[in-house]
Image (tube, rainbow, N blue to C red; front, side, top):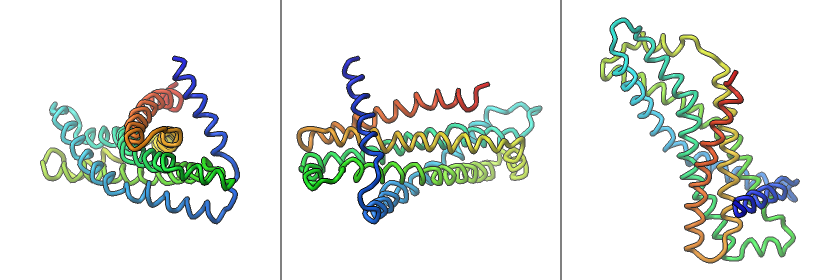
Length: 248
């Protein structure tokens, strides 16, 4: 318990150093756009692939579990839309990104630590946490909501495609379900969750990478630990955010 409190304290102290005004704005924006490419644009492919096929699986499973002839077919599209918007895209895609992006952040910062590049930055009077971590946080928080919108859209298209191929639902019924009782606030809820999860994905791996000690083996262990803890925090935060934003 004492160890957890120690790490939690160091984490928040780290954030205090991160959120300071960048010393050179030109360098900051250069780093920001680099992080958008490394953490965001490079993740679109895997997110699109997974979302399309999971959307199809959701429709097939929903259709097979609504075999009662008295059940309106449009409910398949309705249930698929709600599943994608409320849980799959913001939560499960964030966990996937925690594995892909989180390990990248920890390994890149950890390698800089063990090769003394961070020490060199600090000797030159540069706030290394602000220089390395703040662009990652802002890139994740501002770009990941766009990735989740892409995920939701491709999930719905994947469900529509699966419904047509299998013949489990007609295009008209599916689209009626997608439009039925649509609540715009659910999109807002999804994007708020995504922004919070993006902050977690950027900061927890950065913490594990920045404070790593040792060599290459320790960097690998830190990457694994960062992915595990990031996933745990995302799941716990998902519970509290759902209660706060949807609970009545």
